[in-house]
Amino acid sequence: MPTEPIVQGRVVAVHGRHFGVELPDGQVHKCFPRGKKADAAVGDYVLVRFQGNEEGVIEKRLDRKNLLYRSDEMRTKQFAANVDLLLLVVATTPAFSDDLIGRALVAARAADIDTVIVLNKADLTESLAEARARLAPFRDAGVPIIELSALDAEQTKTKLLDHIGGKTALLLGQSGMGKSTLLNALVPHAAAHTQAHSVALDAGKHTTTATRLYHLPQGGDLIDSPGFQNFGLFHLDPTAIEGGFAEFEPFLGDCRFYNCTHRHEPGCAILAAKAAGNIKPERHALYERILAENEAQQRY
Image: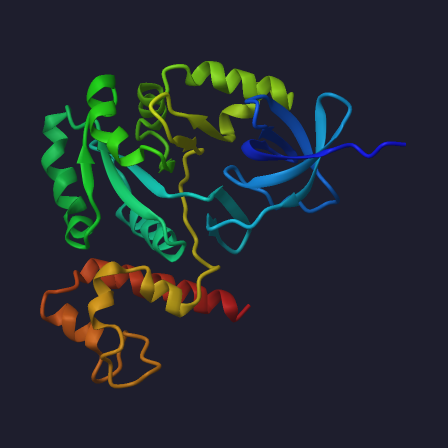
């Protein structure tokens, strides 16, 4: 009996244990993992063995350069793999969470992913000044911020496509920030692509909560993910956490003690930088919260 051929593809949609895998010919096929463990994420490259003409079995996930995910005491949630750029979407209204932005930035930096904050609904000028003020600590930490209105498709393309060109970018943000409008501006036929993926996965209407990869007409890929309301970082160790704060970098290694936690120790270069105004107090407070949460988790 002949052995079915193995083909390399890329995961472009996930719904439960169903994976939409795009092959080199552009066709998306429903695939299942071999065994109980399903560790592939959107953006992963995989080897698939087909059973018949339509469905396949994922035999192997190829090495990935990174994986962006969050983890708390209950579960781990993968966002995407092999990501070059994180587009972190916030809006002038409704109010965004500074804490969640900070945590996403730490996760991205730990995964070696560049980040751009996209301030959407910038046409709502009555809320613009406050949003800018709240984003100032992130701008001061070196994170680029792009202001736009996703309702203006041409403006959105002009401001974002040069950043995405030839890359795999991940759209990430809290619910209500206008991520879907942004996606539709960049990928005019996103709804059609979504429907095609849904048919391939037999996933029906619930696929609105799935993560998907879209090809941009101008080149590059855009991964859309469901909105989130929490962002645990229990998978990061203290070194990765401190490394997740870009403004700490110039001072790391200058503390008196090699195992300094940057919270109370004498001779701490990070605390000295905070006192001198080189590190924002709210950013250091976030660092302390993340560290404390992870230490508490380890005790249980």
